[in-house]
Image 1 (cartoon, helix red, strand yellow):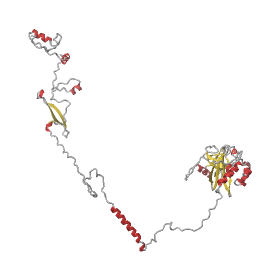
Image 2 (cartoon, helix red, strand yellow):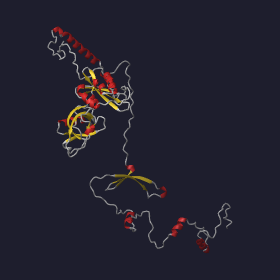
Image 3 (cartoon, one colour):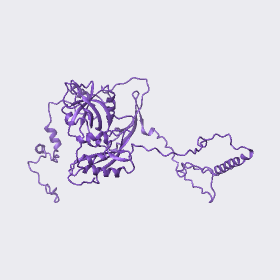
Image 4 (cartoon, helix red, strand yellow):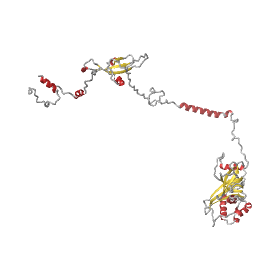
Length: 460
């Protein structure tokens, strides 16, 4: 019989005793004398199910219609009771509210279960969900709203105006992009005509008024038209003997060379200002310039013209061959230029060497004044204002004080304060003071300013 069912095209291996084809059932069937086909070999899923089979588990099989309420199981931690599909979940609550509520609309896919599985179709239903009641409307029962009709853009052709003609009417297509914002052209001829007419009227009036006797005699005249020329002859300007002559610089250069190269006071006396008064002083204090040979004023010397009060003076500064600075002051003396020896030498009645030792009586002192800040018990700040006075050669200095309630205190303080009229200010000024001794318990180099004679060393 095996030869009868032999298939030469079947290359499957022969069945071995170890194959899992249900040998127990074949053996049982062979013992009963029955011939049957061997059962199919079990799949891996069936073997796994058999492996985890629990004979003590009496839970019924799960059916497709069962609803186990996963929410309740998650909260309680135990397996809830079996519930039918028609029963409502504990999470469902009916809200009784008569106020108008919104409508929730959605599409749910429903499978028709009353048709065979092979012919089962999927129907789309439109579900309208309200809080209460609940209605289900099929999608076919709702007719879509008709869409608005779309009208295509209308294109209008532009009408060209005839050549040489200007249209003064607004265009029918004023909303077009090409005409938007444009202004209608307006003729300016009427403005030109109006201006010509007005000009002609004014000219005519101006021509006709004199013919009718109106000459404007009553018109008010300006102040300039009422001025009268005075034929008084101009007098020559009075000469000022305090001003320098026109050639003052040339004369000053010659005098400076003579003064610098002089070896005795007799060579200088003919060229100094106020010779009668200063000759005794010069014989005591005059000193020759430290020059060994004939010397000429260098070209780098600076010449300037200044004023001390009402007097005009010339100031010449420069360097000697040994690079020490020098300065000479020149004033007008009659009809010539003379050297002011007191200003040029910085003459003081008491030399600074004696003033620094509290020797001498003070008197007229020429020096460089600057603000100071040294106060003592005998010269307190509440009563005095302190200043520093330096000798003309800047080698010796003394402290000078002026009482704050003195009229000279305001005059001196004005040098270091800006006034209503802006001016150039400096940290120090050459001044001529009159000094007197300070109180007995003062320092040796402290002096009191009795009078502020003048600024600069030139006597006005």
